[in-house]
Image (tube, rainbow, N blue to C red; front, side):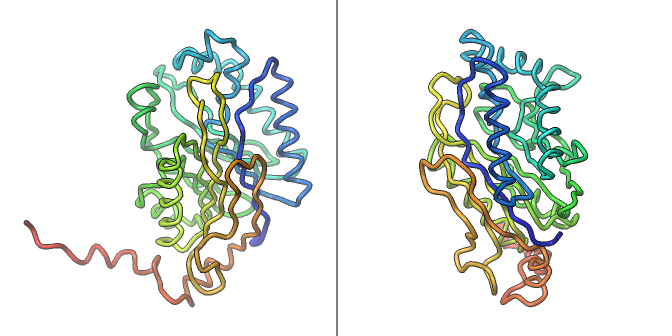
Length: 292
């Protein structure tokens, strides 16, 4: 399936008294996107942190305690996403979830589910100062690409989108669609990720989909302020939007933003475009600036 509808979330952080309330929320989100014909649903970075509310104030107001407490929910959280993907016959990039490792560290992991179960995951590779210095989330080590019924997909978790060699390696491995779940608390943070996404779409002549958390959750130590707009970015060339933005949400909006993507257009533009950014990528390494 080369052409399909993508739903990218502007996702609000809720407060839950019980697990069933989260189930109802996620069920509603997935069902509404499926009813609109979406085949790929993209949730944001750290949207899962709303689950910390289930453990009470002592936990959700402590950055370390919430990481440990949330591991008890991880198996049924996985199962829920698998059930929803199967029921609605969709792919779901779930909100990234801090995931404990065998050595006791935590990584920021984004899981991609399909009707047949977990298709693959990507751990965040480059950590922000907050994650590194205050939250002690550990960087992942492996750049992955994931084979899906819709094509090969790469994932960049927020800050990773600002580093071009990650995307270039994924595209070289066959990913014409990059998913960027994000969580930023300032307009500057949002624009850093947005600019990174658009640059990656330009350089690699590919689609890039950004899904942010939005709104305020003052109870949360981790995701209290959330700023961003869900967007789908494209190459800037024949047959694509002049500004490289195929779809974009509005500030303050909570819900899905939809776009139709056609992966055959990626091959076309790389062969017939005004410019050949992806083909010409290696040429930049043939030149060197004079040494100071």
